[in-house]
Length: 287
Ligand code: UTP
Image 1: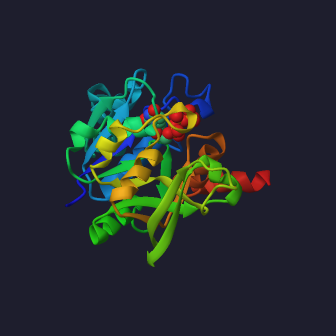
Image 2: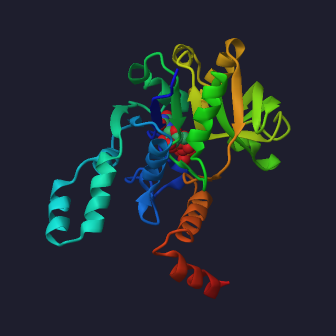
């Protein structure tokens, strides 16, 4: 089956980035000239998927407004002859078919994914975390995962190696190599301390999942942090389904924490055609 739908959970509280995220959703924090979430929607579209469901929540209307049409702005930009900016505004609202569903309480990532059940139905679907952006010069990260899904027909988890002392921040997998950058998952665990970690391969915000996960999520009890964890549900899925981990190519940023956000801002600025020269000079003058 083809992967035609993507869901982006963006209903978390963003406590690691308070007070910035008290009124502004962390997924809407700006990176150079676009909110983090726009980079993710663009990755989905560049990966050949045009139906997107964003899991949102109270006080995050800003997300809907950003991807909506803005008549007044478009008229003003048109009148002022600012065609380039006008085209960009139109592009944002026409980019994809975006739907929204609310997660009523932030009960965890697993629960957030569960909110997409009606939208997804029984097809395989992609999940991209709303605060994880991946820069790739070649194929977009999600496209890489979709191609692995098309080859094997099994759920695919995007992974990369993280420093051993940081395993407690991620879902960690163990696997057997079955191809180039590709592993059959044999075990997974949510946020293990380094002593318990079966490897340093962390699941990093990109998944293609079998729809059977929904029934499992419905029955998954609260796990680490008192939240319904996606990794716990996937661990149960693994008992009956083969799962693949793919070591994707690309630079991943966790924009939901201050360090990751700043790294993304600096590195995207150094790639941005209108900013890189002046900003690069400025950085040189600092060091
Ligand atoms: P995080 O664990 O990074 O989000 O979830 P969080 O809970 O907002 O983070 P902190 O620790 O409080 O800072 C990864 C993604 O899953 C979404 C988040 O919005 C984020 O994009 N999420 C998380 C939900 O949609 N619902 C939840 O209940 C939890």
